Image (cartoon, rainbow, N blue to C red; front, side):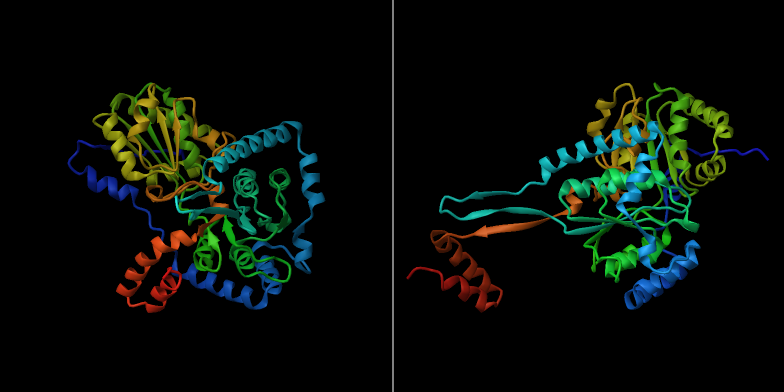
Length: 439
């Protein structure tokens, strides 16, 4: 049986565009009730029994039998050995990617991650103190595939931010360790690493066990069980986000080779059957050319079945009236990855307000951002780019306000505070300010 990928063809001029467009975008973030129930049980069990529960679930779900968590701890020497044992090309690629990711996040830290203060004319000091988190946990998926790039994108900004300890958890079903993941942990400066995964790993990081230290924040993607666990432990610890299926939106003016755009749509579709790939273009003939490229290239792809399922179930090729309308629709979608595949990308970039990452120009494939361009590839999905940002140095820092009121400043601020406090019926607040006023 020949696979076929036929993304939904839409045109903004058609009468039922809005209804079909909304139906194609729809994806529910609601977790299956059975998953939620199982996750709640796992979290409670790990909180109560600690290491013993983690070992039991690791045995059950990963087929990995170990006497204790020490046996599931990756020692620094093992991480270095994994790095040293890589083929030369992989070792150099990993180092080059890490260097670029580190350079970008160093620049980010200088731009938004520094403390500052100033003094009023009366000598009052006001400012902000930025400090790193003490300990963070990074979750690295290890089920269907291995993701060394996720190690770099989570651990390096934490290291740049100054986090004291970076604890990595990665499932290794049946004990199969990926050397690139271990080598990436070595390059990125991971402090400690455990070969555990799933909801039990999230619970161990959130609550702490005899072997796994409790962390302040958990970042990194995972399956539905991991997402449900992160949602439930939020409040005990911080989390980065609840990630949905991967997304790519391509704004094309017809100047990019159709094969390039087809492959860019494939690059997200191959992640998962629920991933979403959308093309917006004002040139109907070009959309036809992209569909022809999809038909021609699909049989050459090792993950053709997943790509076809994704494009058939959630993909769309949308004919717009013009590029301005395409930009407006893009802002409604607020995609995770947004490619501006145009001869004039900087003409359209000012019109784009909501996206996790914006890739400008025909040569800027989304895959370069995934691996080695430098900016973080942990991005908001499912329209959350309307109000949230990529993972960055700022996610591993916190801010404390600095206030030092001088005697003169207390004479100015005290009466203001007193009036407002009395208005709220909080007399002790008012009296505390009044006691500092000169007679």
